[in-house]
Image (cartoon, rainbow, N blue to C red):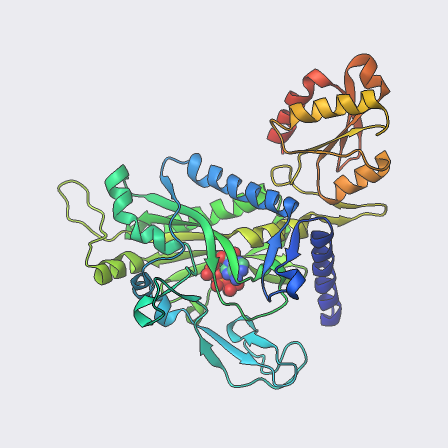
Length: 440
Ligand code: ATP
């Protein structure tokens, strides 16, 4: 495929996803009524449901169902010494250059190595400038150097600073992990990437503590676990690939990193990262804090465990899911979302909105199902339009209450992907959907 065609395809799909997100209440531009704020977005009712589903599935998979992983919820604002010890104050650096013609700023390490001109307009680039993307803030009434700290640029550090607390409260044995989901903040300057690159975003991270000799084994295990989880959410394996970081590209704390990349409309970009952080963080926090963050088995000398870190982005997961689910068919637009992540699992309709007995029955079924599943109710327009509306937001099953329902207590259940309809007894609905959800 020639490169112009590839760029078209990429921009087309992104534009379509952005437009659907805005129109149907998944994602809105941030501060829109004030003209917006670059690289910020707000999630609407449907987007919020998807974010919740992603985070909840991650937590169930990696924390609740595992005896070796402990979940925490650490602070966003930490003592600034944390960032000195972690190396972020000094080494968390982006290199940027501005186009002299269109004035767009580019992060140089995100451009292909041989690019010397602006990728958007071909203009000349200014000299590279270094810049630290952490957001500075002040704690207390004085705004001076001593009061300065940062909004966290990653969730990992509160995990390391709580290492001894977890050892003291739970006495875990190696290998074990500490997990966290939460917001992180970076002063991103590259524009126009929708929710792929934003000023605030959510991470789901695990620091998995191991013996040094085992690092390769656990690196490989996590590689598989990350891949399997992405697939379980409905991301297609053809859209994914692993990319190993070159030596010069490695973050200051890492001895080996691989990114799981997703094909965003013809361009592979980082979805998740997997890094072998050695004992860098525990060792440095021990040095800076004066508190020994070591693991000790009874009768043996303590040591710094090594760390393998799988790092997942909630928002990039969201975007990848939408890209792979987006299907423009001949007569309809359908989001083929895995039911696990779809905003609504079921929609309930009365066949005719002006027939009181049908509406009453539909409301009753909605009330019962919504205790168990996120359920929508729609009584507007004709049935065909309601199906199209639910297809567009990825609702896997639609229930219609019709005249036969009043006679024999059955409804039609229509499947989003096959568009087939079947008659199901109302008393069986809950089990029917539980089984269908379990199979997805
Ligand atoms: P990139 O190279 O794309 O800037 P990164 O290597 O800096 O990403 P990490 O520090 O490895 O990212 O962060 C872990 C995960 O957090 C990423 O894989 C991504 O899913 C997510 N993430 C990082 N920065 C952002 C951002 N600005 N907006 C949305 N998600 C982000």
